[in-house]
Length: 301
Image (cartoon, rainbow, N blue to C red; front, side):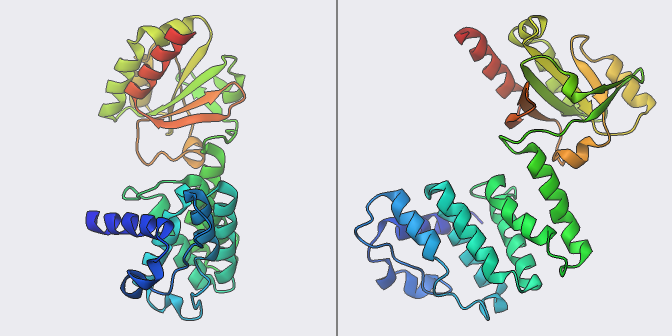
C-alpha cells in the first residue's frame, strides 16, 4: 500500500512539473494517455489546472470501466492533482467527470466508490470532504441506482453538508440527564465545543479528565466565552445517567439520538468546534489539540 501511495504521488509530481512526461513513464504506467501541460504554463497551479481539466480527454468511457483496477488507478491519479489546482478548476473538473458517466448508473456508482476510497478512507493520501461531496450527491440523487446503494451516499451527503468546515450545523434537540430539553442554538457563548462521547468509551473518560482540568478552558467557560457541550448520541439509560452525573458542572451534558445522523460518529471521542453562528470552524480535534489551541488563544488575547 505504501509503495502504491508513493508511486501515485511521484507520478503526480512528475506529470505536473515535467514537459516530457508523454515520452517516458506514460507509455507503461497509465491506463490511457494522460495530458501533458504546455511548456508556457510554468507555475504548479497552472499546470495542475490544465491537467485536471484535460485529464480524461483520451479516456474511452465506453470501455474504461471494463477494468475496475485500472480505472481506479486513473481516478486516483486524477484526484492526486486536486491539492495543487485552484478550487474552481478542481470542482469544475469533477463535475465534468461525473457528467461523463452520469448516464450509466453502474459506472457512476463505481466512480463514487473509487472517490470515497481516495478522499474519505483511513488510507487516503489526501482527505477532502469538499471534493468527495459532489460524487456522493450524484449517486444520492440518481433514482436509477438501487435505493440500497444510494442510501449510504445520501447519509454521507446529509452528514457532510451539516458538518464540513464552513458549514452551518443544523439545530438539535438535546436532552439532559434530568429530562430537560434544550436546543443547540440556545447557546450564547461566542465559541462552542461539541464533545461527542459515550459512557462505555474509555478514551472518552480520559479526554474528559484532560479537558475538565485545563485552566485556560475553565477560565473561558467562567468568562462566558466558551461552552462545552458533552453529547451522547444514544438512548436514555441508567448507565448514561450515572456517567452524565459525573461530568463537569460547568459543561452541558446531554444526549441526542439524531446526532449520529448529522455528524460522523463512527469513531468517538470526537470534537467539533463551532462559533456562535453554529458554523464549523474545525473538527476531528483531540483533547490535546483543543487544550493547545485555547492556551494559545488565552496568551494572544
